[in-house]
Image 1 (tube, rainbow, N blue to C red):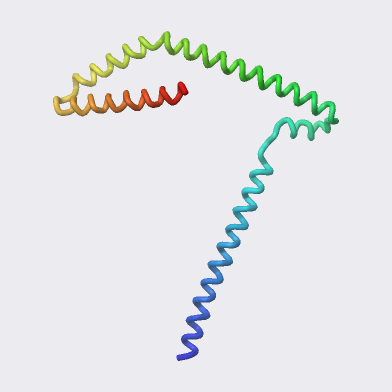
Image 2 (cartoon, rainbow, N blue to C red):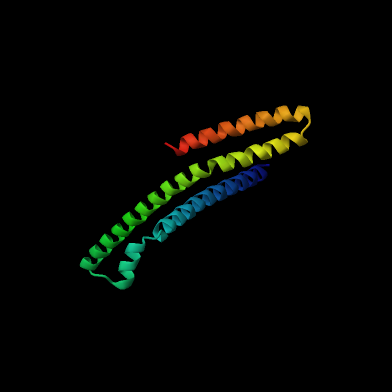
Length: 138
């Protein structure tokens, strides 16, 4: 009887130790993967400076060029966003007309009980659209 108990305890201990070793190994693996990911994140300016073996003056000039380019890209992006908003506002009546026409066509194919549910569905969609628009304007 004692040998069966010892064997059972040994088996349980083996499984417990296996679980602990597995958990620790997995944790170490995750840590290594995270470290590799952080090392592999690209910094194009640093990579270029290293690849070209730039001296400190060249690196500084490169940094200034990159900053100027970034500022120009941002300005262009802002201009594009303003133009998009203007175009969107100009086109709004056409979108609204299409939406109204399609909803009328949908209503024509619905039974009376479905029409009420369709109107509720439209109200919910309008609410969600207003929420999205208020979030994007903030």
